[in-house]
Every structure is written in C-alpha cells, then in structure tokens.
Length: 263
Image 1 (cartoon, one colour):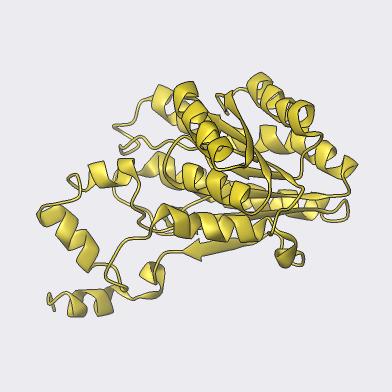
Image 2 (cartoon, helix red, strand yellow):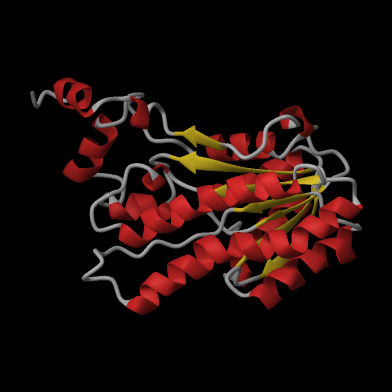
C-alpha cells in the first residue's frame, strides 16, 4: 500500500492513463479526487473506485483555468482532509506545423499542457507543505525530445513541462515537495489508437513493428510508474523525467530501419 492514508488528485482521469492512475492510487490506499473536463467520465471512474471499496470523489475541472484548479484542490482538502499528491496528467494535442496550426489551437495546448502544472503547483505546494511535504508528477512525452512531424505545439509544450518540472523541483525541494515527470512512448489510449487507424491496418502494424519490444505500452504501465514516483519509495528522486517507451528512444534510426527490413 504505497499511498495508505494519502490524498491524491489525478487530472485527465476519465480515460486512458489518467483512469488507470486514479484506480491504481486508490488500490494503493489513497483517497482520490478524480478530475476531468468531462464530468460524466470523472463520475464513472470515481464510482468504480468506490464500488471497489476505495475512497473517491469526482471533479469536473478545466485544468487550464486557475480558478477551477484551485477549486479542485480545495475539494481534496474538504473531502479528505488534505493534499499529498497531484498527478498533472491532463493534456491535449492539436496537429499542425507552425504554418498550419491556428493561434487558438496553439494557446489551448499551452493552457492545458503547461499552465495547468503551474496552477497546480501554485495552489498545491502550500497545501502539501501543511502536511509535511508531498509529490507532484506531470505527464510529459518522448515528443519533447523527438518531435513528430506536424506536431509543433505538442512537442513545444511537453518540452516546457519537463523544464517546469525541473524548476519546481529545485524551488520546493527544501519544503519536502518532490516534482517529477513521466514521458510515455506510444501508449494504447483511445486518441493514439484513433491516430493509428483504429487499432488495425497497415499504419497500425507498421507502428507496432517500429517498437523495439514489439508492442505498445498500456495505460496501467504508465500509471505504475507515476504512482511509484509519487510514493515514499522514490523519496530521493526529484526533478527527473522518467521515460517509459519500451526502448523506442534508445534505438538508433539505422537499427530500426535494419530491423524493419528497410536497409
């Protein structure tokens, strides 16, 4: 029980990595605020946790809105008595080059992917300090270092997440608040599968073949890392970006082409 007696907030918890993380935090003993901009999704995940014997409450939250983030974290204190963990997982991606992407889409990605972490730290750090310390984990991406074509906004915001994680870690280390990032590779979430042809077809098969381990990651595998990073077992680890990609970013392009029979 890595989080027995703790209170955790998970954003983007209505599906995918967030859903798996919320249920895993609960299984490890935490009371969980299940936050998502889609309120009905958050309610379903919270109910799932409660039905399994855990403690959870749903929060319909737009994480890019500072007022709503404050309300979300205040809900944790009101319902469960404090705040120990924030998993800042919610994010959006809008495809396009700098020429193609609209300014509205660009601003939305910065608001949801980056400002959300700032808002969570601004309100959450003092609440954690009241409890003697805590942990913030943010979802970044391998795209921060290895950009995909027509993904300028996603790459830029995820790189900013990693930079912000490092800055927050340095600022609040002496107060007992650790801040780390987890960078997933290709993960079997609904948006990713939709982008790869719905889980079948040549594009999907080619994407699977490109993975050194021969498969995509599962949301629960990312959740396991996030939950561990937020636990006391990682007490000496802060300011780090943990890449969980099945070896994708460790393999050279030459090796990948040779393995796939293209050179």
